[in-house]
Length: 352
Image (cartoon, one colour):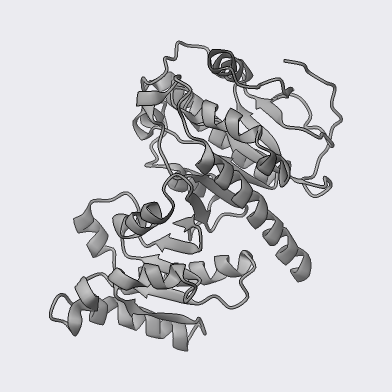
C-alpha cells in the first residue's frame, strides 16, 4: 500500500467533505470486509472522507483473500495527522501481533477491537474527525481482551465521561431510543421507572434537536399490553410512565405523548406522526426496527460529544473470511454519521 507524506495539524471542518472515522471492528469477524466494501461505494465517498481505524496489514490480508480494494494511503498512529487529504485513508495502529483466525473469538482480536474504539474517541475529541461509524465487535472477545463493557454504547460513554446516554436506532423513517439495553427482561421491567424515563425523554428531545429537528414529537411506548387497559394488565403505566410524561410536558415543555400502546406506536412513528419513540426495553425496540429495515438500520449512541453510529448486526463469525458479508448497514451507518455530524456542526455554528 502506498504511503504519502503528511502535514501536521488538522480539522474536519476545513475539508469540503467531513472526515468520518470507521473502526475495523473485531478482526476475526466480518468488520474488515464490510468496511472495505463500504468505503469503496460512491454513495459513501460523496458524503465524507473515510478514515479507516484499524490494522493496515490485516486489512490488506482481508483484501487479498476476498479480492477487495485496499490501496489506500496510511497514517501511522505515531505520525502527525494530516491537514488535508482527499481519498480514504487507513489510520494504522499496527496492533495485531498474535494469531487471529476468522470466525474464532480470541483475546487478541478483542484487545485490538477495543484499541480501535479508543483511537476513534481520541480522534473525535481532538477534532481530527467529525464523527465515527463502528463495525461490529464480539462482546466475549472484548472481555477476553481486557475490556469489561457489555457493548459499544457503554464503552463510548465511559471513554467520553458521558453521564446521560442511550442506545438508539434509525430505520428508514423510524427513530427509536431504548430505555435499557442488554439486561434480562425481568431487570428491564424494573428499570421502567419515573426518573429514568424522564432522563431518557429529555435526552431524546435534546438529541433530536441536535439532529436538526427543532421541536421533536416524542412518543413514550407503553410496557404492558394495550397500555395496561387502566391497570387491568399492569401498574407500570400509571405508577411510572404517566407521571414521567406529565412532568416532561408540564415542567420541561417537551412535546411527548404516552404511554402509547406498543402494538401501534412504531407504525404511527414510521408513518410520520412522531419523530422518535422511547421504547421500554431492548426487544420492544429491535423487533420493529429489524422488521422495517433489516440489514440497513443504524445504531446511534445518544449523549456523546460527537456523533457515533454503528451497523445493526454482529460479527457473523459463521461467514467471516468468506466474502459473503452484506455491507449495506455499514454504508447506511457511515452516511448517517456524516449527515448527523453535518447537522451537529450547523447547530454549533448557530449557537456560537
